[in-house]
Amino acid sequence: MRGVRQRPGPTTCLYFARAIRDFGDGFVAVLLVVYLTELGLGALQVGIVATLALFGSALMTLGIGLLGASVGRRRLLTLASALMVATGLAFAASNSYAVLLLVAFVGTINPSSGSVSIFVPLEHALLAGSVPDAARTRMFAFYGLVGALAAALGSLASASPDFLIGMGLTRLAALKAMFLLYAFLGVAGGVFYRLVPADPAPAGRPTASPLGPSRGIVYRLAALFSIDAFAGGFAVQSLLALWLFNKFGLSLSAAGLFFFWSGVLAAFSFPAAAWLSRRIGLVNTMVFTHIPSSLCLILAAVAPSLELALALLLARAALSQMDVPTRSSYVMAVVTPPERPAAASLTSVPRSLAAAASPVIAGALFAAGFQAWPFLICGGLKILYDLALLWTFRHVKPPEER
Image 1 (cartoon, rainbow, N blue to C red):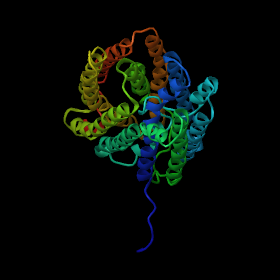
Image 2: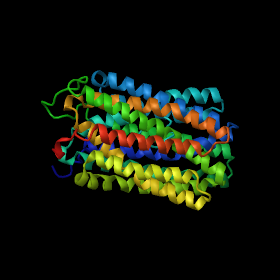
Image 3: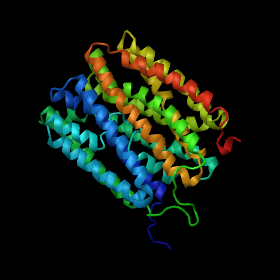
Image 4: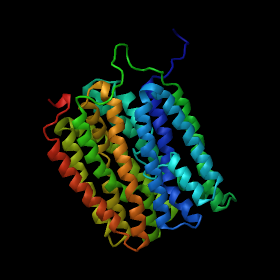
């Protein structure tokens, strides 16, 4: 009827919630290391915080995978938003390292500003059934584009403490204000999750079930994705920011601008990945864009100047995320619809656990003076992962490629 305001669809609500959450992750990933350094903590302690944050996220993702069918995904997403609010408030209120470690473990702090999050498997399961197979990769690419652009804007907002300092706040108070903003974004995201229907699946759609016929495929994917995630943990955004601050003396505003442009390049690589995957396939897109990005990281680690390092890192940013929408689409494609929630969780949990192990190692290497080694290890392991993925799944095709 004319004049009646239509309620936004579940997909639109998930896109808005993703944008809000990733905007917060974008500035927190940069400011986390600045905040911890301002509290007097060193590189190893920063790495421990990042490790606990990723490890806690992995355990919660596992719990979500087990509870999703009985509790309901909309309710779990709303509760996760409430946890985001509590995380921001706790970081703003406490200067105690022990308290921050606890909050990092049980909260939603994301040092990677990427898709390692307790929200992601739930959103993937809800989104996967909303489009036909032919449009699935394009949908995940747009979902990634929205999140990456929001994260890029969040990175640009990481320079906000300098503005707040100019208004008379101390540096520590300005950083705490950003965590209060993070808490507010949790409230806003929760509002959009509440607009998602309790059961958005069409009538007659099979309900979620544990893994069955696709168990072997999912286990092999989870094992390979774990190698990729373990490698990626050596170069999470917080540690990359720490490296730029320490090695080249990069300012906070310059770092925010760099991470903004790297986020923009990553964002527009998502639709490029969807276009490319229609021509060469999902697995080939993952592998043949990932290997050059890893080589760029290796070269950046030994670059003699800031300008060359930033150029190589920007080239990496334009390529390194092209496997994200294709990976998500591939996992959802090679399992049956009832298995999708379990597959999303079981491929995310090992990734998160593996990613949690490496930041503390990277922090120890930084503290010992081996600042290039975390990125060399990251690039080398990722290349090995890509070759193994290509060999193992070269004959496992999604429906649209058969």
